[in-house]
Length: 307
Length: 327
Image (cartoon, rainbow over all chains, first blue to last red; front, side):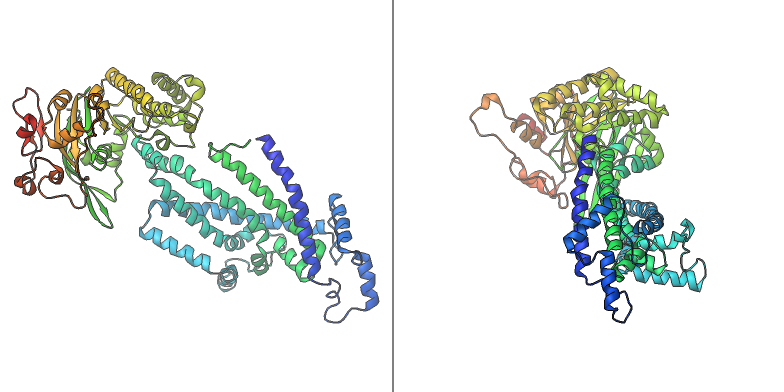
C-alpha cells in the first residue's frame, strides 16, 4: 500500500514536466505577448524590445522553458505583466475556487446521491421518470444559461441573493454559484447512482439481507448503498479536478475572482507565466484527486488490493 | 404442522404476458422433518420458497391465491413488519450461490453478527463473539481470525458453511435450503450436506430442501414432493418413491439417473422440453412428454389423487397412477 502510493507520487514527476512543457509551448505559439500590451495601438519598438529583454522573451523557447522550470523549483512561478507575483495570484485565487468546489461537490453528494437512491428504488414510477427528465434538461442546458437565468431571477428580480460575489467570497455567497457549477455533474451523479442502485437491488446479497429479516432502511444503507457508491465515488473524484479548472464560466457570471477568472485573464492577455503556473497546479490537483479515488476504492471494496 | 402451504398461486406479470409460475402448490413440513422439493428449473420450486419467506420481487411477482400457514398463522395475512421479524429468526433461507449471496464489502463477522444486532439488540462486540461461536459450529477452522475476513477470501465450501451459520444463527424453526450444494465441488457437496443434516437434527428444525439432485435427496429427506410446471405432481415418503413412483414424470426422473449397472447403455432422458409457463398445456401439463398419455390427459387436469394400497400417505397427480405404480 505504502509502496503503491510512493510509486503513484513518483509518476507525477514526468506528468508534471510534460504538462508544463506542453502548456508552455501552446502559449508560445498563440502569438507575441508584447503585441497586445499597448492596447489597440502598435507598441513603440524601443519599449517592446526593452520589455522582451526584461521578460527574457528574446531567448529561444527551450531556454525560456528551462529558466522557467529552474525558477519554479525554487518556488518562483514568475510575475504577471502587472507586476504581481503569480504565486500571490494563486494564493488569493485558489482558496476562493476551493470553497466554490466544496459547495458544488456537497451539492452533488447530498442532492445527487439522494435523488439517485430515491429514483433507483422506484424505477419506472412517476418520481423516477420526473427526475430523469429533469436531469436530461439540466444536462442539455449550458451552464451559462442556467447561471445567468438564476442570477437574473434570484439576484436581480427577486433580490434573494447578491447578484455578484464580493472579493472575500464567503461560503454564504457561494451557494448559488456552487449550485450552478454543480448542476451538470449533479445530473450525472443522480443518473449514475440510480443505475447502480437499480442494478444492485436485484442482486443476491440484497435478497439475502432481506431474507435475514433486516429492516428496509438497513438493507438499503448498509448493504445496497455501499456497493452502489463505488462508481459514483470515481466520478466525484475526477469531478473535483474538473470543477476547480472548469469554473471559468461560473466565475465570470458571478464575478468570482478564482482560478477560472485568473486563467481567463491570463489567456486574454497572453500571459505565459500565469497560464502555465495555474494549469500546472490544476494538473497536480487532478492527479492527486485520482490517487485519492484509487485509494478510496480499496476502502469501499475490500476485493481491491494494491501492491 | 410447522409449515403448510395450501393451494398457493404465484404469477409474474411481464411485458410479454403473465407467467404462471406456481399453480396451486400444497405441501407441509413437520418440526424435525425434511421435505425435499424436486423438479427441473422453472418448475416453481424456488418461487414457492421465496413466497414462503416473503422475499418475492413484487412487482412483477404476485401471489394470486392460497395460504401459507406457519405455526398456525397465515403469513399472507401478516403485516410486513411482522413478517420481517419472523424472517431470519423463525424461518431462514440458504441460497445456492454463496459468493454472490454474501455481501462482498462486509466482513463475514459483520454479516453473521448482524442477525444478533438486529433481532436480539446485542452490542456489536457481543455479536462478534456470537459470530465466532457460529463459525466454530459449522467447523470453520481458525474462526477467531477468519471472522474479520471478507467472503472472497473463503473457499466455496467455507462460504456455504457461512451461509448455513447465518441461517442457523437464531435457531429458527424452519430452514429452506435452495439448492445448497449445486454450486460446490462434488467432494465438498457431501460434507456440506452432512453438516446441514446433522445441525438440523440437533436443533430439531423443519427443513425444506429444494434440489434437482436425486442423489442428495435419498440420504437426507423424509418426504419428497415432485414439482412440474408450478404444481406438485407427486408426494410420498422418500423410500416409496424410489421403490415405485406413482407419476410418469417421477419415473422419468429416476430413470435418468446414471447407473453403474447400466454402463455402456445410452442414458435415459425425458423427451421434450419443460412447458412454457406463459402457455401451459391444457389438461395435464405433462401430457406432451408423457409415455402414458391418453385422450383424458389432454382435456382434464388431474387432481392430486390419494395413492391407495400402500401403508403410507402418498399422492399423485396422474389419472393413471395405478398403471404407473404397477407398470
